[in-house]
Length: 202
Image 1 (spheres, helix red, strand yellow):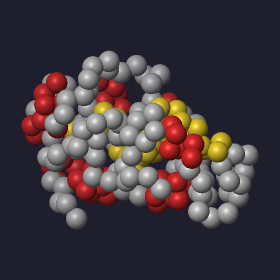
Image 2 (cartoon, rainbow, N blue to C red; image 1 turned 30 degrees about the vertical axis):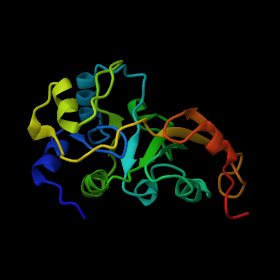
Image 3 (cartoon, rainbow, N blue to C red; image 1 turned 90 degrees about the vertical axis):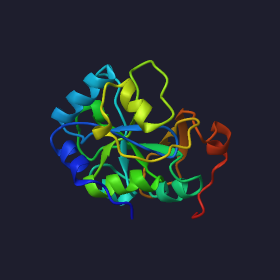
Image 4 (cartoon, rainbow, N blue to C red; image 1 turned 45 degrees about the horizontal axis):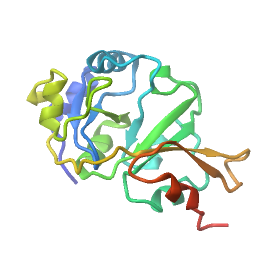
């Protein structure tokens, strides 16, 4: 597995942010606590009423944080790794800047992003850009655009293209019923492909 510099992990634990690579665009990571989110939202000039998503190395990392629908893993595995973000019900209400009662969760596919989330725990997975501006294609340019130095960058290549597709499950009983899946934001995976999905287990 990719080794993550202890210096960068320390930055996260000190409430700072780092730019890191994902399978699509450069991401901006902080730990999902109040102090760190204050820093991230300030750097991005992002409105506090626009929640950011959480990135993890696997769905198991958010057990106890969100309710995971029965077919969530099957759904994720049906599409290219890292191409989806799932909007899931929080077990208990959290900071509104990471969703309040619903948290958007992305399972990373990029080996560097996965290693970072494995080392640090769940991190923010928002794009590394100022609100309303395009995301730079590489991590160093993205950091520069945010006024961050190279010591706040985790190296790695981004494939570019569209961001992940944000979806939510709609069902009365998430434990047993086959859910319908609603696209909240179209990205790498098209609405048509999401609508056409059927679970393998019936």
